[in-house]
Amino acid sequence: MANHKIDMLQIKQLLRLHSNGESKLSISNRLGLSRNTVRKYIGLFHAYQLTFDELSDLSIEEVEDLFETRELLPDSRESVAKNFFPYVSKELKKTGVTRYLLWQEYKEKYPEGYSYAQFCHHYRSWSLRITPSYHMEHKVGDKMFVDYTGKKLSIIDRNTGEIQEVEVFVSILGSSRLTYVEASLSQKKGDFIASLVNTLVFYAGVPAAIVPDNLKSAVKKSHRYEPEIADSLQDFALYHNTTILPARAYHPKDKALVENAVKIVYRRIFAPLRNKQFFDLKSLNEAIFELLEIHNNQPLKKEKISRRALFEEIERSELMPLPEIRYQPKDFSRGTVQKNSHVYLGKDKHYYSVPFAYIGKKVQLMYSQNVVEIYHKERRIAFHERIYAKHSYTTKKEHIPSSYQYLSEWNPNKFISWARTIGEHTEHYIAKVLEKKQHPEQSYKSCTGILSLAKKVGEIRLENACKRAADYGKYNYKSILDIINKGLDQFHEDDFYQENKLPKHRNIRGGKYYE
Image 1 (cartoon, rainbow, N blue to C red):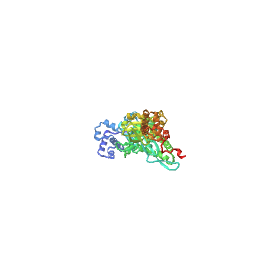
Image 2: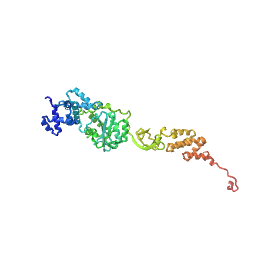
Image 3: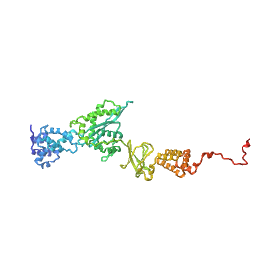
Image 4: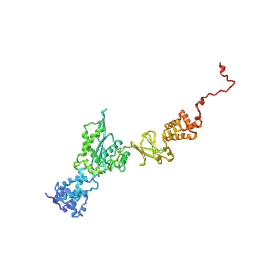
């Protein structure tokens, strides 16, 4: 059956009646058109957002171009276009590709096909039928959505038989919809960041933005316009050169894509695992990854292409490269720079230097397993290798004032070597001074003062003073100075016990008296 030409005046009459409030059935009866035809042109009229007055001002050619005045039989151009739309959906995700460009390709292949306006209208309708709850054209490499499932999986303790529920992390790329799933012990900061790192390794790249839900590990304080991102997540984003865009609270459409992914995960991962037992996270995740691979390689019903194939074709190349060194999760603490240009890291009970200009300032310490970074108002002011020695100091010479820099040139070995040149007792005494003092600057100053006495009184006197002070068990500069000032370093023990002859006196009887 051939297509029937619809007069342009009939279209205007149809739309005039509709604008006057006539029902579709009434218009169909009055104009002798099928109700589907009436419904179609009213739909186009609303899609173009025209008023009847605006339509009246259009030329015949413009009206024909808008409405393609033919009454089509079912499954003609519409079915051809529907078969072409999956290709359109895939190509639109590529950089620089527009609907108009794809329409030109369509017209070259199907010269009798839809005009551009009708092509866009039918494509929108087709797109809405595919994803009725959330329709958005996601750019390739743009966003990665992450969330946790509401339901949980579990592992069994081999020794006690206790069942422990575990969290299930889900992420999905907006464009290709390639999905990643893993089980973790909790949603806490460490586990959350670790899951994000594993996700980026799985995708072998970094998207322009990550969209998490408002969980505590991601958002410190929720806000409609400027939510406060958790420090750990902010550092993760900076390291990977990406952005964190938390979904708005109470706006489910912001995360509809990942919520739909969670529903699919329930069917394709939770259901097959429901009757299986796992005794550790590793074995559970191995089972998850096997089912995940099947899910990602299964063709999408409408697009006729799998998530994995779509990812490899259009999205992998658009992701930013991963850093060469895998990200290490970090912890945070705050402190005040002390007068000695150091700040205290309470977890390790260790002191790290910062530039002396920040003395008295509040700073933030950000530390991983290997390094410690110190920030003041989001500016990094110091970077150190992490040292786990308690009550010790890590100092960079340039961080301390010039009047105190001489202290940074000293270390215990230098003082002990200096003392060794004076004598054995001095070396032993200086070692004890270094051992007793809690603060390195305090001990260095004491050692400098003690050893400098050799120039004033000589090495022999200092060696004797150190020996006598060690006998007293006193290890400080003041004790050595007192001994020298009182001349005790020159006093010999033998002189104290030397027997003196008694003077003759008439009252002294003598030894013969007792014979």
